[in-house]
Each structure stands twice: as structure tokens, then as C-alpha cells.
Image (cartoon, rainbow, N blue to C red; front, side, top):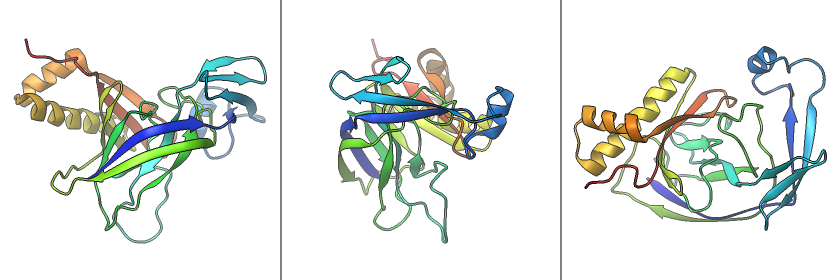
Length: 233
């Protein structure tokens, strides 16, 4: 696997967010929310990387928490493959927890790994329900990479400032939930040498299941287990 240490993420001075249908996001959701008809509305943001605040042209002030929506390795297979949906080797996560200070672990599926990054976000809520975050350029991104040839994993996991995170991606939300929980179970079993049922009981007390994103062709789910949430007396 490849470990990606996210050292620095500095957003650029501007960003944008659309509300409404813009042709390639979740049309069904926009229709259900009454936001599919007519022209979309646009928020234009001025971003301050020092105060970590964003100000819209209409006077809305939000707290910034910059991250990269896209961090992934090349998937196995042949032919052209879209970079839009996240996969077992990472990609378009759109997970707001992958901030500076994160260690992201990705399984290698092709020789060389072939890391790609991008899709700068200044702020986003879980789910990315409108189809976009505060989309922005990044003035500075600093990463450090490590190869762990003796530690294979099947799917991404991350050690973030908020806690350990495992992921699930699937067309079915239920399948994505099951995958993310299963990988967190395996992580807790490794760390605490527990039976599967005891690990499930502990996670039911200490972990959160969150919808990562709803808009990238597949549903994304992450399970977060805060650091020190489970300790031994």
C-alpha cells in the first residue's frame, strides 16, 4: 500500500458553489428538492487562508476547512475509466475529513501506483448534498509518500485528526454502509484482538457512520472512530 501524508493544504483566494441543476450532478435529488428547474444560482466566495474564513458576495461568512476531493491511485483494468466515482484504490472521495495532518492509506493495483490529486475544496458538509463544495484552486499542497510493501490492504483507510476512518463506495447506499463498517470492524479487531461480535458492540458505542457524498456516480460512506474513543482501563 501507499501511505499519503497530507502536510499542507492552502486554498487560493477565491471559490464558487452552485445551487440547483447544472447538468451533471444528482438530477433526481435536485428534482426531489425542487431545485432542478430554471438556472442554477451561484455563490462566489472570497477566501482568506490566514483566518480560514470564506465570504460570499451576498455576505455569508463560513469557516474554511480545506481538503482535496480527489486523492487516488490508478485502478486495475484496461481501457478508459472515469475518474468521477471513487474506487477501492481511492479517487474522488469528497471526504471533508482528509485535511492536513491526515495519513491516507491506499491499496496499489497497478505498477507504480500512479497517484493523482486535485479537486480543491475550501469547505464542504458531509454528503456534498448540492453536488459541489466551495470549489477552489489550491495555492499550496504538500504531500509525503511512503510505500509499505509488506502491509497490503483491500480498500482505503485513513488516520485523520478526527480519528480513524474507513470507507465504502457502491451504487447501493446499504452496500456502501456495510463495506465501511466491515473495514472498521477489521481495524478494531486488529488493534484490540477482539472477536467480531465484541468489536461490533464497541463500534456501536464509539463510532459514527456518515454519508461522505451522494453525487459521484456511487454512494460514499465513511465510518469514523475518534482517537481515544476506546481505551483499556
